[in-house]
Length: 123
Image 1: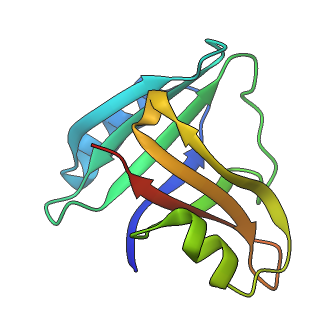
Image 2 (image 1 turned 180 degrees about the vertical axis):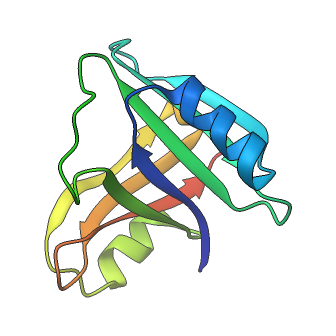
């Protein structure tokens, strides 16, 4: 498995993306908006291809310590197989296609309850 991105909940995706570009040398990668139109996801990448997903949900701009962390995403060859094989400590979301993101995903929890997204890119 490869770590492919980390998602951060942010109050303003454009402002935060600009900071990562200006201060840390990240570059624009891609973006998508959720099907309900409420959450915009802006991706910036470092020189090695690691991405930060900056998730901006309308009306959410006050985060307590710890709530800005959303999930860790790892690339897998087969989401369904990985979902069945991994000893998870809670199912957040079973495998499902995510057309807007161009992937099939599932979300599970690690032993401490941190959310891990399993991502199978779809071509």
